[in-house]
Image (cartoon, rainbow, N blue to C red):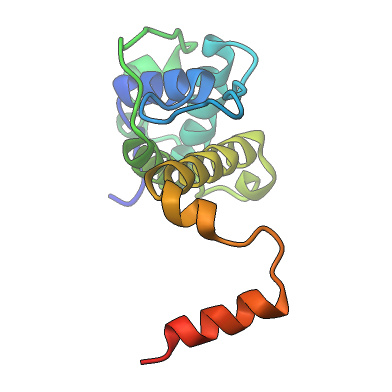
Length: 154
């Protein structure tokens, strides 16, 4: 089986994290902007994209789409948000399951999940590697390049 609808819990965790941000990241410089209008709307948008993908791949085989996914999505707060690493991996799973149909590349779900991965990765790098991040030049100069070349020599 190469495409499936992830569990309802998977969607609830994605929605909570995409709406509220990452729990393991310090937002002192910029707060996380929600990646949807409402929890239910975001979940519905994400779920419909996956169902469309699975149906495109397998036709109308009803066994491939669980019963809960055939009804409108209703958010259930899972009580926790995904960490940056968990978020990136969960979104990668979601995107893999949702990309089978022809309209995926231009879909809002593709754009939102790409943005969420980008934000999570950027926050992860800037927070977990803060010292190196702070030392990296903002605007590279010839002097910065020379220093980097010297540091990279064996």
